[in-house]
Amino acid sequence: MNKLIIDLGTLPETGKRMEGELDPSIFDLPPRDPQPKGPLSFDLHVQRFEGEVLLQGSLSCPFEFECVRTLHPFIKTVHLPHAAIAVEVGNFGEVDATEALREELLLEIPNHPTCEIADTPQECEIDPHYLAVDKGDSDDVDPAPPEGGDSRWSALDSFQADES
Image (cartoon, rainbow, N blue to C red):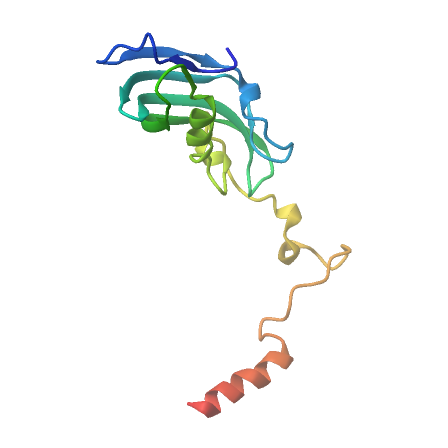
């Protein structure tokens, strides 16, 4: 299904349980962002309180991330086992809760994902090929600074010592 529509006219006063899956196309994320690799699954208790509908329960969706260390892709399922979402409503009709579920799950996406957190954890080490300090002189990479540091900075170090 593409939307989670709640019919307020048939919603019991004590609420009801709603479960199912929403199509991953609801996320509509740019290509460089994590991409959903399956549906958004939900298992929620839905109840109306005056001017809002409260949805409580679990949400989950698998996403493909790119590791910030290794740049390798990996799959991580984002889980919200105790979600609580309030959606404002009018007096009658239907409420589309799709956007609220989408936003709640997107807030749980890690900012700097590493492949160690994958559903199947991977070894997460930077390939030494990309580190200039490990390169030999024959490569087209500038050599690392000498052990004693750059002489331009040592003048500042002595200036700071004089201040003390």
